Image (cartoon, rainbow, N blue to C red):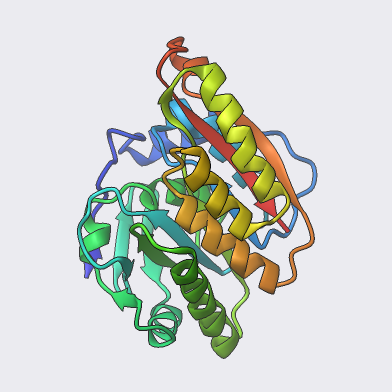
Length: 267
């Protein structure tokens, strides 16, 4: 099936040339790119979170295959939904789903279901694609949309992803799409987000999951980030870094009701 953009013209420009120019404004000047295993990148409107996303994607090599894991904001579809076939039409060109890998991941766990409904109106994965396309025109991807899940279920999802990658001998980048604290003051959001970020820096998936839960941190993509860390550690990750943190207040000027954005690389 063909999926049309859900938030083009809202979160980012719908026109290809305007979008390309907009992304260019958010990029970092980097002399050497790194080969990342996983990243955390935000998914808000580009005027707010574009600098953070741009800081991440400027620094990494984009491989042939990208696995994108995002939170389910719409409540539609299965609890862990994988769109297993079709094309996503984006302003900068169409992108094809890696059907073989998507089906292999679904086959590895009954929790992970082939389902397109969760993806039709969801922005968390879509907003990553223009940055990826800016740096690499041709790649295939697997979109995975997650509702709330236990740590045990996150582990099961990670094992399914690892099984699919191993079976097909793929080299894949795993993107966890997440914003951080929502609608608190800049000071409060920054303090809470630092606690979660520190767990990611330690590559501690269980620590991240439990810390976010216990501290009441409204990090919408904690499940995707947990799954990404579990995968990355199994894939040989040895370090993580924070490339940029900011809040929406630094753009809007409203420091009383901000959303936090963290850009992180695991390698």
